[in-house]
Amino acid sequence: MPHVPVADHLAGIRGLVAFRPETGRPLYQLAEALLVGDSPLTRGERETIAAFVSRRNECRFCTESHAAAARHLLGEERGVVDAVLADPETAPVSGKMKALLRIAARVQQGGRSVADQDVAAARAEGASDRDIHDTVLIAAAFSMFNRYVDGLAALTPTDPALYAEMGRRMAEDGYAPRVDAIVAGR
Figure 1 (cartoon, rainbow, N blue to C red):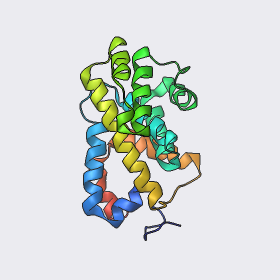
Figure 2: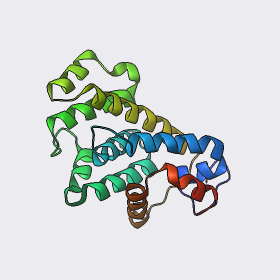
Figure 3: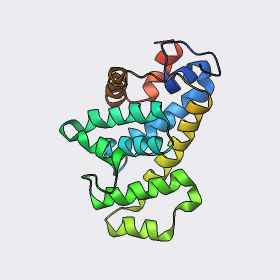
């Protein structure tokens, strides 16, 4: 049961955004900038990083919803998401993506865990400063989002079909444009 009143049909962060739109709106704008906005990383890669960090934080809602978005965006390569969540070191992703996932894991542990050698390894694999920046910010933001969702015991569905629909919606519609609909209870 959530620690604050939320509508039964608004799972995860959606219910919390409806509860307090004045804080929810900037959170959704941040998600939009990080996961949909301009970046050298593909949208599928960014959603995969979000799901990966959420898995490490044991936030089921964010893991499942962002993994579903990544699967939708990656299409025929959707299995990559599950491989990353299982073991990023053996997942069929580039050396650059593996290095960025290592950085994301360090950020999830604590920002000061990112070492010069982590950044150097990512650069050696072809990561740009912007790749590194965006990875760190996604990992930091999702650590916050995960704690927000779990700290208020947001509704967490168990039906995989619900997550698949959420993932489709996030992949196709983004985040920020949806806040008004969420606040209205849709």
